Amino acid sequence: MLKKFSIENFKNFRKSICIDFEKIAGYQFSTDCISNNLISKMVIYGRNATGKTNLGIALMNIYDTLSGRSRFVREGVFLNADATEDWATFSYTFQFDDKELVYQYARFSDFELRSEELIIDGNIIFNCNFVNKQFNLDGLKYVDAETANVERYLQALNEGKEIDGEIEPKLPFLRWLISNIALESDSILIKLYNYVERMAMITANNSIIYFSGMYNGSFYKSLEKSENLQDFEDFLNEMGIECKLELKKLPDGQRQLYFAHEKLVPFFESASSGTLALVQLYRRIVSIAREKSLLYLDEFDAFYHYEMAKNVVQYFKKKYPKCQLIMTSHNTSLMTNRLMRPDCLFILSSEGTLTALCDATERELREGHNLAKMYVSGEFEKYE
Image (cartoon, rainbow, N blue to C red; front, side, top):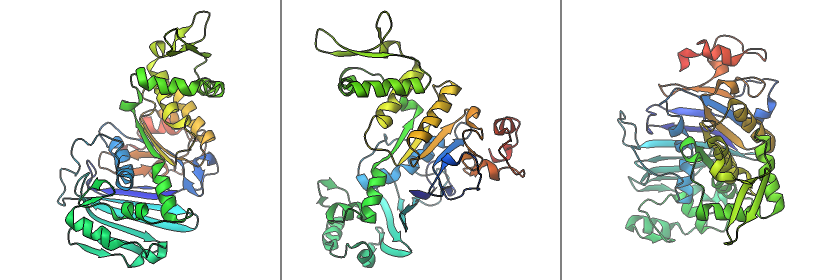
């Protein structure tokens, strides 16, 4: 699991900002927000333009780095506009079984690395400075990768040649290493890669899309199995949308999903924006066979009634207890000890600081406190 993440000099984050999943306060309620002594469910509040979306994009940068694929349209500025350095730094600390892995790197842009380093249990596995062309690869023995043909990597790096179909002057060494070494299935590097591959982010602006044509075709195909249709129906009902669904095959061979009433009502043409947001969440997360490792749901409840937002949180807590779930919201109804807890509720300030509610007041917050009322009354205003 991810223990700590920090970013500096990226977009609106001039100073270092850190998400510390280890910083728990020992509350004896809402313990389902904690897994393996790490925060596994958190909600981040913040005024508009504080960087809630940018924080998620920064967190997901490791996916782009290790996979070579991007899940986001790369647009806008990369570096902080007031920065004196011309690079941003990313740092990730993971815990896999009894081992701690730290992967950190610096980037000039989305496409160009400045440096890269991997540390496991305090041992430097490698350290690459792409600017000065200095490479310390002496620690590869700690991950059983001492036989890697690093000369091939360095030669191709210097010449800017194609490596495994990719043309990238500064191909991340860790990505190359994982792709070019036969690692054991229980290798910590494989565990890292599998974790990163299962990270995902859903934002409010991509949660509502137009469902039609080929996009719907694959979804309808999956719903042809009665158990899948039932699972989707159960999901909507659990979210508070009481409905019965029916999938029909039309005369032209196409399939159509309906709300089952006395007369069939086309699903996508009549569903509300909140329901469509749920469909996107279901398709991207719930319906897949493999559980996500980390989810960043940015303003996930933008189209939801407050009760539905609570249902979504409760659903993920129950169905995915080990998945690290980060949600951003303006919905204070989620700010309750019955659902969350003060060390799992955070405020992102306009200055780029992230503070848990339990650290944002001089009071000792207890289970009986009305956190939402305290928030609205300005109790935590200093940290906004």
